[in-house]
Image (tube, rainbow, N blue to C red; front, side, top):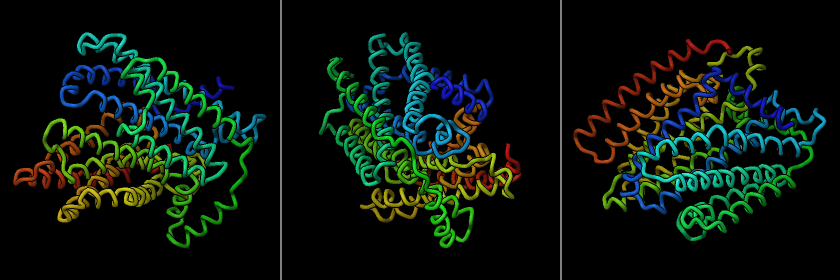
Length: 450
């Protein structure tokens, strides 16, 4: 059965991107890891080693938790998948998700972690790292990702057993990561990286085994149908939003747990990024950020929320309805703005707590960048944003269009002066013009379902 799950995953990604793209993506990871590792000594001169390792491993944990949530609480609700059709297959739901867990464990190891390891090995003549250092670090990253992935598996089981337990578990995970980063409690895999003591590695492996075993035991044998609950929720949403597409999208947001997943994949990484920037400022003995520059970074990271909104649509079914892809794209954009506002507005108020005068420019830059990134994404990826990750051409274009203005705005907003304000004004104007142009192109481009 695992073989069929792996074949399905392979075919799924080939359907989203050209065949060569699937194999080119690991080469991107090898290249960027190798190039980035060359500057590791420069990074270590300005950033404490323990903080760097802790931030890297906790970020990897969040990545593992995020891809797990994507699978267990996102893709499981899509149509035409082995996981989704378990109710009509001669296999229990519990065993189905067990295979899904193993499939993604193999898949992400081969597609992400091994290329990272290869990139680190290639960089050794230039980075000065030894094979032992590279191997220990790669093993730590692997274990940290599996801790996050196994935690996500358990959160999925709790979600279907008891929602209160699910929320408490998410809160526990959030608090643990924050306390671990601050050094209040140990993070065993980080201790293994620091000390090379195999005991800490054993603790981590035991934790992964315990999380996985508990998740498997708590996953229900079968899921009950909640069709009637969704139907009632749709009526309620329709009465509030009037627009039936928007109402349908809000139902997907609720049944897919997108608010919670967006919090874990957007809010929590931003909190860790703010901690990273503050530690880096202390190490450099100067302020290298302002509330305005952090607001720009906040808007850049918000793009991840948009991808969550596109994973629950069955496009083969929607293609038979009197709806164009542009109708879906517009609805996705509306809901995206609503969700990121719920998460980001409190953060922006917090960042400008001591300087209320910065609220207006912070909100202006935030929503400008959100609009711009949505327009670029709509033009490049259309209604199937998940395909963007496996299409090198789209990835390169999106990186160029998003990173360049983001860097310009971030750097210019660190030390505001006459020149900086002029640069921000010119960049913002160009972003508005290019964003409007991208929306016009997207409306003409995405007329039919591929």
